[in-house]
Image (cartoon, rainbow, N blue to C red):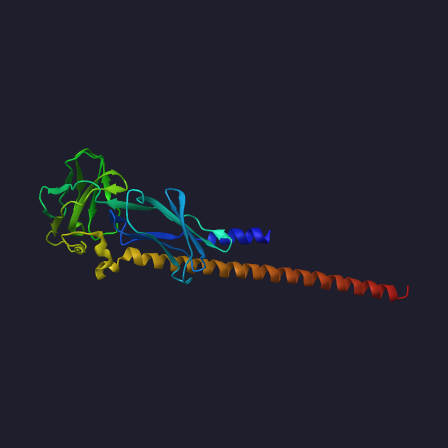
Length: 294
Protein backbone atom coordinates (compact mmCIF):
# COMPACT_ATOMS: atom_id res chain seq x y z
CA UNK A 1 0.00 0.00 0.00
CA UNK A 2 2.81 2.40 0.94
CA UNK A 3 4.81 1.67 -2.26
CA UNK A 4 1.72 2.26 -4.40
CA UNK A 5 1.05 5.56 -2.61
CA UNK A 6 4.69 6.62 -3.10
CA UNK A 7 4.56 5.78 -6.81
CA UNK A 8 1.38 7.79 -7.30
CA UNK A 9 2.91 10.69 -5.37
CA UNK A 10 6.03 10.70 -7.56
CA UNK A 11 3.92 10.58 -10.71
CA UNK A 12 2.24 13.78 -9.57
CA UNK A 13 5.62 15.43 -8.93
CA UNK A 14 7.11 14.54 -12.36
CA UNK A 15 5.74 17.49 -14.30
CA UNK A 16 5.99 17.42 -18.08
CA UNK A 17 9.22 18.84 -19.51
CA UNK A 18 9.58 22.01 -21.57
CA UNK A 19 10.73 21.73 -25.19
CA UNK A 20 11.90 24.45 -27.58
CA UNK A 21 14.18 24.97 -30.57
CA UNK A 22 17.31 27.11 -30.82
CA UNK A 23 17.75 29.45 -32.60
CA UNK A 24 14.12 29.22 -33.78
CA UNK A 25 11.37 26.80 -34.78
CA UNK A 26 11.74 28.01 -38.42
CA UNK A 27 15.03 26.84 -39.94
CA UNK A 28 16.20 27.42 -43.54
CA UNK A 29 16.97 24.28 -45.52
CA UNK A 30 20.44 22.93 -44.73
CA UNK A 31 20.96 24.99 -41.56
CA UNK A 32 21.60 23.41 -38.13
CA UNK A 33 19.20 23.55 -35.20
CA UNK A 34 19.12 22.27 -31.61
CA UNK A 35 16.08 20.86 -29.85
CA UNK A 36 16.27 21.57 -26.13
CA UNK A 37 14.38 19.71 -23.40
CA UNK A 38 14.28 20.72 -19.73
CA UNK A 39 12.96 18.65 -16.84
CA UNK A 40 13.25 18.66 -13.06
CA UNK A 41 16.73 18.77 -11.43
CA UNK A 42 16.56 15.06 -10.59
CA UNK A 43 16.04 13.98 -14.23
CA UNK A 44 18.66 11.41 -15.29
CA UNK A 45 17.61 10.51 -18.84
CA UNK A 46 15.68 12.16 -21.67
CA UNK A 47 14.01 10.70 -24.75
CA UNK A 48 13.09 12.63 -27.89
CA UNK A 49 10.13 11.52 -30.02
CA UNK A 50 9.65 12.55 -33.66
CA UNK A 51 6.14 12.11 -35.07
CA UNK A 52 5.34 9.70 -32.22
CA UNK A 53 8.45 7.51 -32.65
CA UNK A 54 11.53 7.36 -30.42
CA UNK A 55 14.25 9.39 -32.15
CA UNK A 56 17.08 9.88 -29.63
CA UNK A 57 18.17 9.43 -26.01
CA UNK A 58 20.31 11.77 -23.95
CA UNK A 59 21.53 12.15 -20.37
CA UNK A 60 22.22 15.55 -18.80
CA UNK A 61 25.91 16.41 -18.50
CA UNK A 62 25.43 18.51 -15.36
CA UNK A 63 22.28 17.56 -13.44
CA UNK A 64 20.97 20.43 -11.38
CA UNK A 65 18.44 23.21 -11.35
CA UNK A 66 18.98 23.92 -15.09
CA UNK A 67 18.61 20.30 -16.12
CA UNK A 68 18.63 20.72 -19.92
CA UNK A 69 19.69 18.37 -22.70
CA UNK A 70 20.32 19.22 -26.35
CA UNK A 71 19.38 17.15 -29.38
CA UNK A 72 21.29 18.64 -32.36
CA UNK A 73 20.20 18.41 -36.00
CA UNK A 74 23.15 19.15 -38.28
CA UNK A 75 21.15 20.11 -41.38
CA UNK A 76 17.43 20.87 -41.58
CA UNK A 77 15.58 18.93 -44.31
CA UNK A 78 12.11 17.71 -45.15
CA UNK A 79 12.97 14.50 -43.28
CA UNK A 80 13.72 16.33 -40.02
CA UNK A 81 10.80 18.79 -40.18
CA UNK A 82 7.78 17.76 -38.14
CA UNK A 83 6.43 17.46 -34.62
CA UNK A 84 8.70 16.67 -31.67
CA UNK A 85 8.02 15.84 -28.01
CA UNK A 86 10.31 14.80 -25.17
CA UNK A 87 10.02 12.97 -21.84
CA UNK A 88 12.44 12.41 -18.96
CA UNK A 89 13.11 9.80 -16.29
CA UNK A 90 13.74 10.31 -12.58
CA UNK A 91 14.46 7.14 -10.67
CA UNK A 92 12.17 4.45 -12.06
CA UNK A 93 9.47 6.87 -13.19
CA UNK A 94 8.90 8.62 -16.52
CA UNK A 95 7.27 12.02 -16.96
CA UNK A 96 4.35 12.85 -19.19
CA UNK A 97 5.28 14.06 -22.72
CA UNK A 98 6.08 17.72 -23.28
CA UNK A 99 3.88 19.99 -25.34
CA UNK A 100 4.48 19.49 -29.08
CA UNK A 101 7.23 21.40 -30.89
CA UNK A 102 6.51 21.92 -34.60
CA UNK A 103 9.85 22.29 -36.35
CA UNK A 104 9.59 23.97 -39.77
CA UNK A 105 12.02 23.93 -42.71
CA UNK A 106 11.91 27.07 -44.88
CA UNK A 107 13.26 28.08 -48.32
CA UNK A 108 11.60 25.08 -49.93
CA UNK A 109 9.46 26.95 -52.50
CA UNK A 110 9.29 30.23 -54.42
CA UNK A 111 9.14 33.59 -52.67
CA UNK A 112 5.62 35.01 -52.03
CA UNK A 113 4.69 38.69 -52.10
CA UNK A 114 3.02 40.49 -49.17
CA UNK A 115 0.96 43.69 -49.24
CA UNK A 116 -1.29 45.49 -46.74
CA UNK A 117 -4.58 47.25 -47.56
CA UNK A 118 -5.94 49.86 -47.48
CA UNK A 119 -2.44 51.24 -46.74
CA UNK A 120 0.55 50.52 -44.48
CA UNK A 121 -0.05 53.56 -42.26
CA UNK A 122 -3.37 53.61 -40.38
CA UNK A 123 -4.90 55.02 -37.22
CA UNK A 124 -5.63 53.09 -34.05
CA UNK A 125 -9.02 51.39 -34.36
CA UNK A 126 -8.82 50.88 -38.13
CA UNK A 127 -8.96 47.49 -39.85
CA UNK A 128 -6.32 46.26 -42.28
CA UNK A 129 -5.82 43.14 -44.38
CA UNK A 130 -2.51 41.55 -45.31
CA UNK A 131 -2.55 39.80 -48.69
CA UNK A 132 -0.01 37.04 -49.33
CA UNK A 133 0.39 35.80 -52.91
CA UNK A 134 2.46 33.02 -54.45
CA UNK A 135 2.69 32.57 -58.22
CA UNK A 136 2.93 28.79 -58.00
CA UNK A 137 -0.17 27.18 -56.55
CA UNK A 138 -0.04 26.08 -52.94
CA UNK A 139 -2.64 25.20 -50.30
CA UNK A 140 -1.58 27.14 -47.20
CA UNK A 141 -0.11 30.49 -46.18
CA UNK A 142 1.42 31.71 -42.93
CA UNK A 143 1.70 35.28 -41.64
CA UNK A 144 4.27 36.16 -38.96
CA UNK A 145 5.19 39.32 -37.12
CA UNK A 146 8.95 39.58 -36.69
CA UNK A 147 10.39 39.67 -33.22
CA UNK A 148 7.45 37.79 -31.70
CA UNK A 149 7.40 34.33 -30.14
CA UNK A 150 3.72 33.74 -30.92
CA UNK A 151 2.63 31.06 -33.34
CA UNK A 152 2.11 31.95 -37.02
CA UNK A 153 -1.37 32.55 -38.40
CA UNK A 154 -2.32 29.95 -41.07
CA UNK A 155 -4.91 30.37 -43.83
CA UNK A 156 -5.81 28.06 -46.71
CA UNK A 157 -5.75 29.21 -50.31
CA UNK A 158 -4.53 28.46 -53.81
CA UNK A 159 -2.41 31.41 -54.95
CA UNK A 160 -3.51 34.24 -52.59
CA UNK A 161 -5.12 34.69 -49.18
CA UNK A 162 -6.04 37.64 -46.99
CA UNK A 163 -5.23 38.00 -43.28
CA UNK A 164 -7.67 40.52 -41.74
CA UNK A 165 -6.30 42.33 -38.68
CA UNK A 166 -8.17 44.78 -36.51
CA UNK A 167 -9.25 46.92 -34.96
CA UNK A 168 -5.54 47.68 -34.75
CA UNK A 169 -3.67 49.33 -31.88
CA UNK A 170 -0.06 50.38 -31.47
CA UNK A 171 0.66 46.81 -30.37
CA UNK A 172 0.15 45.79 -34.03
CA UNK A 173 3.00 48.03 -35.19
CA UNK A 174 5.90 46.12 -36.65
CA UNK A 175 7.31 44.25 -39.61
CA UNK A 176 5.44 41.33 -41.16
CA UNK A 177 6.36 38.57 -43.58
CA UNK A 178 4.46 35.65 -45.08
CA UNK A 179 5.23 32.15 -46.34
CA UNK A 180 3.56 29.72 -48.72
CA UNK A 181 3.41 26.03 -47.87
CA UNK A 182 2.15 22.64 -48.95
CA UNK A 183 2.07 21.38 -45.35
CA UNK A 184 2.56 22.62 -41.80
CA UNK A 185 6.28 21.89 -41.68
CA UNK A 186 7.71 22.81 -45.11
CA UNK A 187 7.53 26.50 -46.06
CA UNK A 188 8.64 28.75 -48.90
CA UNK A 189 11.23 31.52 -48.79
CA UNK A 190 9.99 34.45 -46.69
CA UNK A 191 8.35 37.37 -48.47
CA UNK A 192 9.89 40.81 -48.49
CA UNK A 193 9.07 42.70 -45.27
CA UNK A 194 5.98 44.90 -44.95
CA UNK A 195 5.95 47.43 -42.13
CA UNK A 196 2.66 48.40 -40.48
CA UNK A 197 2.56 51.84 -38.87
CA UNK A 198 -0.27 52.60 -36.42
CA UNK A 199 -0.76 56.14 -35.14
CA UNK A 200 -2.51 56.73 -31.83
CA UNK A 201 -5.82 58.57 -31.59
CA UNK A 202 -5.70 61.85 -29.73
CA UNK A 203 -6.12 61.32 -26.01
CA UNK A 204 -5.53 57.57 -26.23
CA UNK A 205 -2.74 56.78 -23.76
CA UNK A 206 -3.74 53.23 -22.82
CA UNK A 207 -2.22 51.50 -25.82
CA UNK A 208 1.02 49.60 -25.56
CA UNK A 209 4.17 51.11 -27.07
CA UNK A 210 5.49 49.74 -30.33
CA UNK A 211 7.35 46.44 -30.16
CA UNK A 212 10.92 46.50 -31.40
CA UNK A 213 11.72 44.68 -34.62
CA UNK A 214 14.75 42.51 -34.13
CA UNK A 215 15.39 41.47 -37.73
CA UNK A 216 17.11 43.35 -40.54
CA UNK A 217 15.77 43.60 -44.09
CA UNK A 218 17.83 40.54 -45.03
CA UNK A 219 15.75 38.56 -42.58
CA UNK A 220 17.22 35.38 -41.19
CA UNK A 221 15.86 33.45 -38.18
CA UNK A 222 19.47 32.67 -37.23
CA UNK A 223 19.96 36.28 -36.15
CA UNK A 224 18.22 35.16 -32.99
CA UNK A 225 21.54 33.74 -31.82
CA UNK A 226 23.51 36.98 -32.23
CA UNK A 227 21.05 39.73 -31.35
CA UNK A 228 21.35 40.49 -27.58
CA UNK A 229 17.85 41.98 -27.47
CA UNK A 230 16.34 38.77 -28.77
CA UNK A 231 18.42 36.59 -26.45
CA UNK A 232 16.38 38.13 -23.64
CA UNK A 233 13.18 36.70 -25.20
CA UNK A 234 10.69 36.32 -22.30
CA UNK A 235 9.48 33.05 -23.81
CA UNK A 236 12.88 31.48 -23.16
CA UNK A 237 13.22 33.00 -19.70
CA UNK A 238 9.78 31.61 -18.87
CA UNK A 239 11.15 28.06 -19.23
CA UNK A 240 13.29 28.51 -16.11
CA UNK A 241 10.61 30.45 -14.25
CA UNK A 242 8.02 27.75 -14.92
CA UNK A 243 10.41 25.03 -13.75
CA UNK A 244 11.22 26.95 -10.56
CA UNK A 245 7.51 27.37 -9.87
CA UNK A 246 6.88 23.66 -10.45
CA UNK A 247 9.77 22.67 -8.23
CA UNK A 248 8.52 25.01 -5.53
CA UNK A 249 5.05 23.45 -5.69
CA UNK A 250 6.56 19.96 -5.65
CA UNK A 251 8.61 20.85 -2.55
CA UNK A 252 5.51 22.25 -0.86
CA UNK A 253 3.61 19.04 -1.62
CA UNK A 254 6.47 16.99 -0.14
CA UNK A 255 6.50 19.12 3.02
CA UNK A 256 2.73 18.75 3.48
CA UNK A 257 2.81 15.00 2.84
CA UNK A 258 5.79 14.61 5.19
CA UNK A 259 3.86 16.47 7.87
CA UNK A 260 0.76 14.32 7.33
CA UNK A 261 2.77 11.08 7.39
CA UNK A 262 4.59 12.20 10.57
CA UNK A 263 1.31 13.13 12.22
CA UNK A 264 -0.16 9.76 11.23
CA UNK A 265 2.86 7.94 12.66
CA UNK A 266 2.70 9.91 15.93
CA UNK A 267 -1.03 9.29 16.13
CA UNK A 268 -0.50 5.55 15.75
CA UNK A 269 2.22 5.67 18.39
CA UNK A 270 -0.10 7.49 20.81
CA UNK A 271 -2.88 4.96 20.18
CA UNK A 272 -0.46 2.06 20.70
CA UNK A 273 0.89 3.65 23.91
CA UNK A 274 -2.64 4.26 25.21
CA UNK A 275 -3.55 0.65 24.46
CA UNK A 276 -0.45 -0.62 26.24
CA UNK A 277 -1.15 1.61 29.29
CA UNK A 278 -4.76 0.44 29.42
CA UNK A 279 -3.69 -3.22 29.17
CA UNK A 280 -1.04 -2.72 31.85
CA UNK A 281 -3.59 -1.07 34.15
CA UNK A 282 -6.05 -3.90 33.65
CA UNK A 283 -3.31 -6.48 34.33
CA UNK A 284 -2.29 -4.64 37.47
CA UNK A 285 -5.88 -4.59 38.79
CA UNK A 286 -6.28 -8.28 38.01
CA UNK A 287 -3.17 -9.13 39.99
CA UNK A 288 -4.36 -7.06 42.92
CA UNK A 289 -7.70 -8.85 42.85
CA UNK A 290 -5.83 -12.17 42.77
CA UNK A 291 -3.67 -11.53 45.84
CA UNK A 292 -6.44 -9.88 47.88
CA UNK A 293 -8.05 -12.46 50.28
CA UNK A 294 -11.70 -13.19 49.72
